[in-house]
Structures are given as structure tokens and as C-alpha cells.
Length: 312
Image: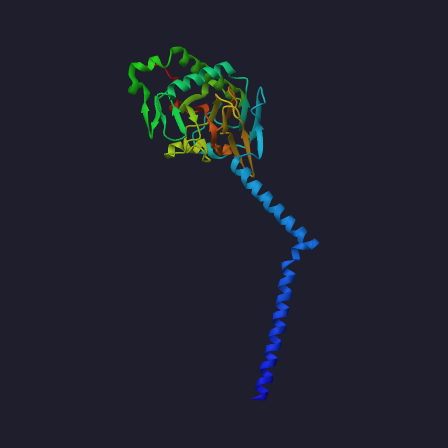
């Protein structure tokens, strides 16, 4: 029994020593960051995490590199990129199928007065309907107009009343601006403009911050025009309102490898690009106000050509 008591005492002592050792280690671990080495490591870790958070946010919002600011006025600025393999999967058209790929921005093709008149045209047309979500379209070619959660044909839906909304002068201006954009694309990419054809869909868009109600309202997803619409070879956007004044968000983003490149809309500004996967892109969500623009698309395949719109 005496031996047992001594053994238990020894065990108790050992446990006490072990507890003291553990307690000492815990105290040292608790104050390691207060030492110069620990504080430096802690600050470095915070810096790294901060940089990663900023990078992820930048990539999401497309603020890594701004190609053209709204406040700038440029005659033309061209950014060449390597052509993708996309065009090899389609019939080739000499003097038209992209061999020189890239994107361009110009403020000298459409003037502010023309863009203001086109904006008023869009406002009148879209006032006849509008999506329940944040994105509405008006296609003067097909007559498609967003209305609620669907589309209607304005020429059938409103009949002769549509002539009280649009005039022949409106459509003449539309044709003139389309021709100017077509010639600018042909000149920039060294094309024969007579081999470049207007194609569908070509439409006005109105975007605000209203939450999406259907997939048609979800305009912000990354996409490739040549994949979405096989007929597209060249895509253009004519902006009818000003970023930072008429709306927030809503910038156009080219999603390049390791970096996003952003175009800030300006009324009268035309941004155009080859439609393949070399120009993966998306649009930021509009955070406030209303963004107006026209998408005008071109093909090299005459089978997909459409005519300019005309009053019925």
C-alpha cells in the first residue's frame, strides 16, 4: 500500500509538471504575434489577403484596366489581339472573314446630336412596353419589344398607331448611322465594306438596376458572340448615354487572360470588335440610372444578311 501511495504521488507530480509545461507553451503561443517577428508575419499575411481580395473584386467588377474613360474623346483607338480558331469552323469569305482581329473605340463616327436623337427614338419605342426585369430591348427590324416577361411585335401589336411613335426621319437616321459604323469597321479591319452585311439580332437596349425576372434580363454573363450567334463576324455597340452621369455600373468588359479591360460608355461612342472568342466579354450590372445603347452586328455570310428597318 505504501508503494502504491508513493507511485500515485509520483504520477501526480508528473501531471503537475506536464500541466505547467503546457500552460507555459500556451502563454508563449498567445503572445507570439506581439513579438517583432510575429507582428511582421501577421502584417504580411493581412497584406496578402488584402491583395487577393482586391484582385478578386477587380476581376469581378472589371476595374483592372480601363481602355477608354468616359471623359476622354478619341478619334479612334485600336487594340489588336490574336484571332481565335472560331472562324475556321465556318465558311471563309475573302476580304471579310477576320484575319486581323481586335477591338476599337471611336468618338468620331457618330456625333452627340445623332446619338441624342437615337436615344429619344429608343425612349419612345421602349415606353410602349418594357421588361419586368432590368433589361429591355427594341428591335426595329423584327419589331420585337420587351413587354413584361415576354416579347411582342410592335408593328402587329400597335398597327397603324406605330406611325405616331416613329417617323421616316427616325429610320433614315438609323440607316445613316448603321452605314457609318459599317464603314468604320471595314476601314479598321481592312475589309471590303460591300462584303460586310447587317445581320440579326440588331437592337436598342435599355438597362436599369431592377432585379432580373427571367433569363432574358440577365445580360451580365460572360459570352462570345460567335458562339451565341454563329452568323456574327463583327459586333458593334453605339452608346446613347453617359457612364457616371446617366448611370452607374454598366461598363463593357473584355475578359482577357489574367486581366479585364473596360470601356466606359459615352453618348455617341462606338465600340466594335471581331466576334470570336478572342473577345470574350460581359457588361457590368447597372447599379443606378438607365443605360441606353444600340447593338449593331455584321456578318460575312450573305445568307444571314438582313435589310435596314422600315416603317410598315
